[in-house]
Image (cartoon, rainbow, N blue to C red; front, side, top):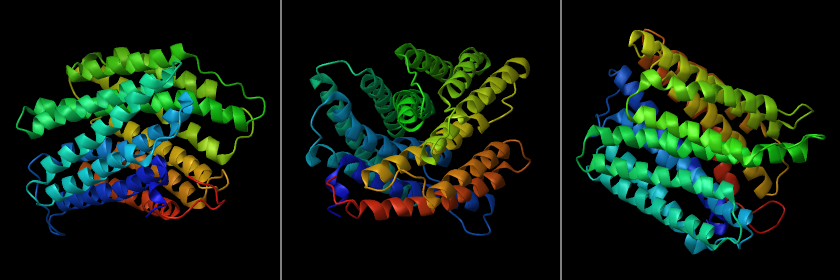
Length: 398
């Protein structure tokens, strides 16, 4: 286990691999039991299972990878020393312990959800404080770090909103927590990392590629996403097209402008293929909003959200974590077969989950999609765990 603790990304990606598998194993089992109760039965948790699924995926599963990345790159972006072990291990304890306790709670341990929340909030608070201290210490102004810190702070507020609900507050607190996790925390975070890293990677790998990443572009995208967040928080679904249309146009232009025109390595190509889910996402959100404006019917259900969650977040997660893992374990910067399997399978899973909203039996297809997620990411997660339990193959530290 000592190798896992040698760097923030090692610990948090190892935890993230475990969190991915555990979270989706529970969710797939719950969907199967709900759709086919004759197969086996699972009790309904005190909190609605669908809300718990969203909270676990946003604030525990994906947050594991986010913290692992930020705790590694923040010092490097700012020219500061790497963080010592004592400053990142508590984050891992909180996020992993929090998810395990939460899942024990949904399986019947009465204190599980509040204990899991307390651990998760403690890990988040510690990690946010470490990153904030780095921003205060830097001599210059690293705008990407400040953007990430803003998104992380909005996520922390969302986690506090979930705490209000768990403590007995209105279900509106749970609604706010989920929306803040999606449009306050994860989407701005992914957009910020894409803005900084994708053109940079392409410039290093594709001859003649000119990176283009003006800061106004990031500011505009962040502002439009926050507008969508505000409209959702106030249930103004009939008017969210006002944010979704410009986001559709902006993300379509980004895909065209950033796309490598020359021959690109597979490990770079998958980043941009994942990015291509963004215009799909906002086309669905736009269509949903216009349909609601004209008919009052929420026609696409959770289809746009899962184009974002599985299509964009999931695809870019596999692409980015694979890249970091290959490079920081001393391996060649190539897309290994198990990562290709995960990435390609996720595209199928995303389509199935989106289409599920349009079928006569959506829960059947939701369960199939959840099982597909496990099949897609299971081998990939196991490979991550094996890599981070071992030293770098090139003998270098870290």
